[in-house]
Image (cartoon, rainbow, N blue to C red; front, side, top):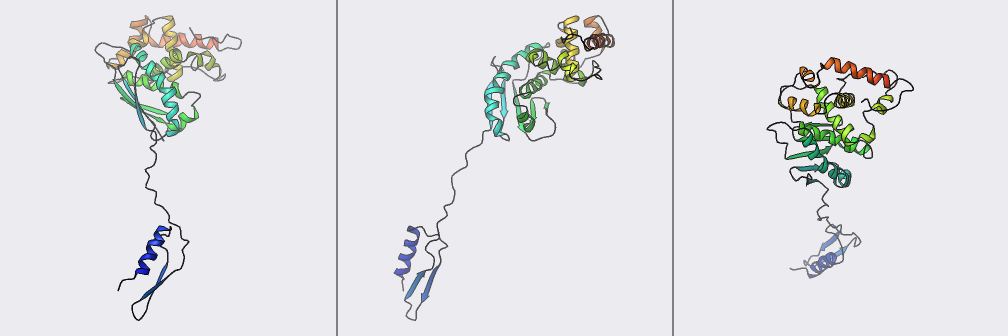
Amino acid sequence: MKHPKLIVAIVLAVATGLSARAEIQVTTGPNDDSEFDVLDARVPVVAENTAAPAPLPGKFNFKSTDGKCEITLDTAAAPELHDWAEHQLAPVLAAWYPKIVALLPSPGFTAPKHYTITFKTMDGVAFTSGTRVEVNKNWIDGEIHGEAIGSLVHESVHVVQHFSGHAPSWLIEGTADYIRWFLYEPQSHGADLVWMRQRGKRFSPSYNGSYRITANFLDWVVNHYDTNIVTQLNAAMRDGVYDDHLWEKYTGKPLEQLGAEWKRDVEAQLTPGAPAKPAN
């Protein structure tokens, strides 16, 4: 037979917030008339969370100021950097990508029309492969008010360099740092005599020291011999025809002689009492 009391009790239990696990004792009598007791009517219903989680900030695209390149910043793995990337980094890259392209032309070359910067957990600081830049999100977070933006201007130079064949790594990195430290943020003194003075008394620069040191050498050559040297050497590296003899072709002096002359100039200014001015 039907058990209306049981049915009503279950409906009541659901309506009053009993969970499906509320204990109901059913006693079956000899005449199949069932009685029930709710042993615990205070068990709350635990509502299942069916709402979709709020989406984390992820990729966003923007155009360079000349409209010729689309840049993607992927902060999906670093949502804490999203606001900084959108409001501080993006405007700099939008403005500077066309400037980098203009600084590094070569016949028949078209700069990439899209590249992506991905913030992630990784070793090192950053690296660029073709149009893909990956950067250490923890390092960026620690340099958010320091070197973060400049480092990605540096990586954007690598996107435009777009080399094939052999090219010396010291010159590749030195070119990127020349554009960064002497053109984008010279006020930071990240590669000039101010920075070199902080290296200590044992600091002895070499033209092929890469990064900031080679950047300083390039700036010296630009100011003393050939204002177009960076563009010409980059074009040769891009075309896979770089050779050390090109320095003599463009400046009238071989690379080793230029390096020695620059070194003497720098070290003379690093002596105590010398004015802290760029080596030019």
